[in-house]
Length: 453
Image (spheres, helix red, strand yellow):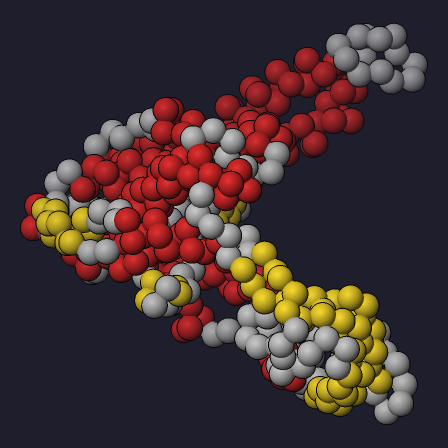
């Protein structure tokens, strides 16, 4: 097989290769001979159809199949022969040839850039140093108490955090509507389970009080028949109850489903859970720093445009899914490439860098870590065995998990070579929590796993 390679521009290459007609004819004849013993044609006994008849009837179809397969195989051979690493699928075009002549083709494609990952020993990352304090346990316990609150009926007017149980009927312009009535509905004032204006209108009411509450449905209400309209709800208060937090004792432990070990076992499990969350968050922060610094240290890398275009498509599809989840009916969001270009180029650059680290350092998939990742996925699923079976039966899903695991192995390899300094912080600081509520920017669904593009 004759091969010549031409650099067209940047990372693009044009490969011209010649496949001998003899190679194709030999394979076509072999297949037709094999087919001769299998085909059944009227007028001939099974296995006795003459070769010429088989060739006339099936020759063109078999030749097309052989040419396609030989072309694919010869392209792979040419890549290996020339030591090229294509970045994507080639554009293969046949060149005009006369019957009986060797076949000639051109294949245009981009190659992966030459990458040298260096200077890792110059990089520095900060490792969060976090001790789980008693105050962290107390905060979780307080949340559990509030989630398991008891309610006691009172004779006073209702206030914030009270549960007001009501009957109500609603009308718009004197007529009923979908969802216009409820009986014995418990509303905790300030919980947000009902519109804020409605909940606040229940403050100051006692049992047996009656009140008409006016509520204006927002213009962007999910129910378009109610959007922008004003309803009058006739409300009757059945009872008012105040919250009563349970005591932190062994009975509370039983309420949480812990039969042995009592309240101390509750604290022990909470500590274990917080330590798990801490370790995962520390790992995520370290990984993000590694990726950011690796990217900044190799920001001049030339990228195959085919990979960037493929990533733009992925990001655009993801944006569409998010819009649909948010309730948008738009099927093709008008998002310019410029809005996605930076993110696409970042992901491709990191993919190439991590891929080179894995390849050049012969990092092999750790089967133990893969099993741990599978087990963690299963532990968070309502039907763990079904999830495990699904991954076993769907190779594409398993490959995605394998890529994520080997990516983590590459990050570990980098962490062994960069300088790491401890940064003391609290658990809340690590988790991005201020004043007891999360206060961090929402991260993309691929944050911390953005190389697996």
